[in-house]
Length: 248
Image 1 (cartoon, helix red, strand yellow):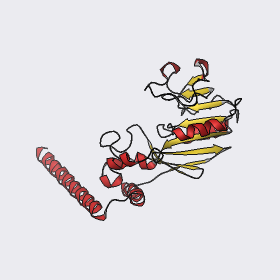
Image 2 (cartoon, one colour):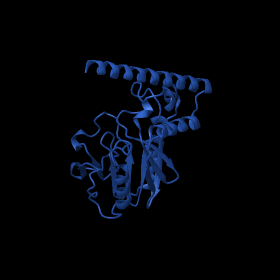
Image 3 (tube, helix red, strand yellow):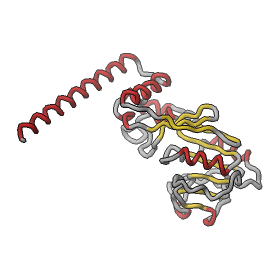
Image 4 (cartoon, helix red, strand yellow):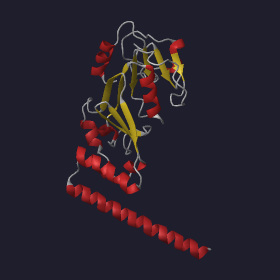
């Protein structure tokens, strides 16, 4: 959780409030009375990152719920039974974030959601030369109280112009690396789908061009390189098919 927001979250929680932390295994939110995650209680804090949300764990082994949060089984709480829910750096990892959003709204009165910024998720160099984190499934935008999920199409790793260089990732402030939503009662969420490789490429290029564009000469060079590489692949493919025809 973005450190400056930890106290903001705590300030919204009354001493008597019942709190759920969703996906808090790696870094549990100690103020939570319940934690729900696919990984077990005994392995909490696996990476050794200090917990947030106070010095004392309010949850216990018995209030740690180990389960697949996307399995379409309703969360084990009644409608608006919980006072607050936190979900930090989880939605980008899971196969059905829309279901988890719907359940958060159902069981809680208000809450806090945090995810990587799309800007950070679109940078190379976080894990080698791939874009963003290898285990993240979504490119996500938060605008107002609406969360929009876009599949992290594999094409984003193909051309440099679909993403940002490693140097940009290193230049971002901690605040620029994340985005968040404080919500009360409910919020909006949806998935965007794009059909066709060319349309996917156009969306990825649009985001780069509108957010942190490359110089025109650089983009032209990358497009020329991509076209040459594509031509070489077609030639190799045709030659391979021809040779296979001679062998048959």
